[in-house]
Image (tube, rainbow, N blue to C red; front, top):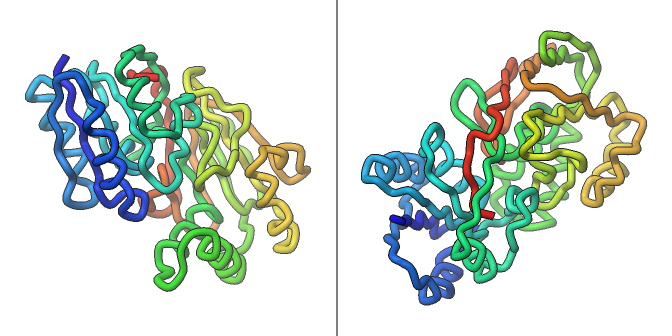
Length: 285
């Protein structure tokens, strides 16, 4: 089977190139390799590889790289492999793919694939979690912080976002039924984790044909600060302000347009629509 490795060398704060150098000598099956040169290129490389007859593609990078490759192969029978080499690597947690790159390579060598769901939006497809409101705004703040990295940057981003934004009236339409809430955020979850290990949707399954739509209601800024650490363990789902609904099609509208993200990338503002494509992607796991 023709296998193409698409490697994003700058993923994981430039650690991906080192990871790739560590594992490439262990690849003992026919393959080709392309290193991306900029954002968005992985999608077009994947599209070109489909035309060349590749039946298996391996994304080496973070969730953003994986998402780009998926957007290039959606609608085909290409199998997707993943070597985690990003900062968050959240999607692999839903797939039970090992975090250690050599162990993930061993999974690819075994070659067992399973069909999983995809999310669709107006500009493309997402694999893991889409969100509107506080999560997207924190992400945007974090991307614009130049002097901090890692946990200090995340903490600073949360504080700055809390100072700039608050909960707002929203209309959420799920499979044709409309709900009105005052919300901090809406997360449309295919997978369980986002934001580098935050278990936002503990009960999500990536092959059930449904989104878990997670809503965080109107609580104080102090309560938000208490709430966020609980998301890492999933214990936040017992919080009175946290609500989960399930459905196949979702429309999100805020009274004032709010930022929207998919797989950790800002894609625009609300209103936003999402739909699930059941078992539309073959993943080696």
